[in-house]
Length: 455
Image 1: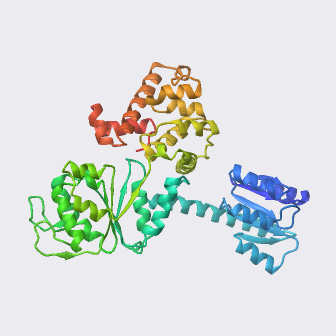
Image 2 (image 1 turned 120 degrees about the vertical axis):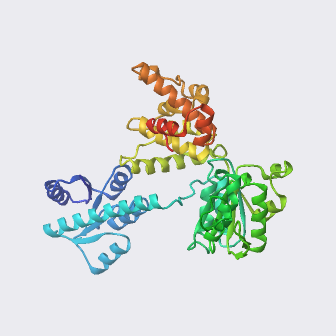
Image 3 (image 1 turned 60 degrees about the horizontal axis):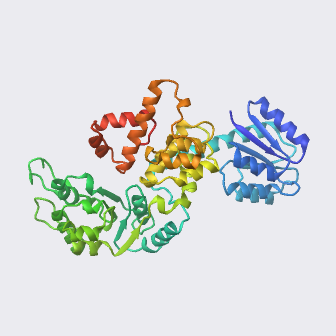
């Protein structure tokens, strides 16, 4: 059932509109001033607004402009003093339509239905775009994040190579995506290679391609990532895990803008901007003989360091609120509010898994909490490694045995705590975690899905 908000300072108009819309099975809220209307829009899920233009204190155009700053809900403007200029101004400010008083019943109902259909389409489009696009906003206003945003704006339009450093789960991939999105190459492909996920004996074939028959399983010619990214951007994630032989070939490709497929002799020219990322200290890797110094200097024309979540705790409320809205939309449930005490409890956690761990935590809280997310929920479902700290903060025991009716409930609770702790400790790496705790990857995934953990 769609919810319609009526904002009009004339009680007879509000009463008439309410009777008409409730007869058509709409849920109706009404207020007599714009300020209260905006407050309702901020707090409640409203699908459509009918707003008078001429009102005391705050007129309808001000309400429309204020609402568009934080909401996409469609507005139908109504007035007894309508002119073409007024209608044009309303449309320019984002109104769906403009109706004159006295209202024509048939036109009113048709306009309401059309506006609601448009609102539904807008919401569906946003969800689809979010699912299709992997490039999300870089959220936060901390000093470290502000420096990163500024660096992206300056560096993206150039072809300078960039080396992004930071811990697992801190958001290095997102920085790389924005460097591509804001570059002159944005219409060309962004090709990603996770160097840590490809066996050393296959990395050269993956990057440069191979000719048919160049090795046993090379049954046909294959185009490598450098060629696929021609004209665009190649993102080499976890570059610190690349083999020395592959490093030598990457260095040559960067020096000469040419590659040779495995088993081939022909040189192929490529126009690729390379962005690399690592969670390792490459200078230490150079000292240990695991990374080439000349390649390091080729890659690090621009250095961008992504701070860990523990270094930017002031951004946690913004990130948590955004994740909460996003996840609730995916589950098609009303957004759950996070209390101030819950936010403080979230900020107190160590966040060894960084942004990835925070999103996992928010999703778990949404699934397991009540109508709102409280500090008790945070302390209840946080990692076991911080239980003592949380108990002191909240003044309660980490394990609330009264919430567990059966022995099976306790076993499920303990198992979830153990698995999530191990997963976070290993940077969200499913394969590594499964190997360490002695179960298969599929079993671990099934258990995490059972407990509502994000994979």
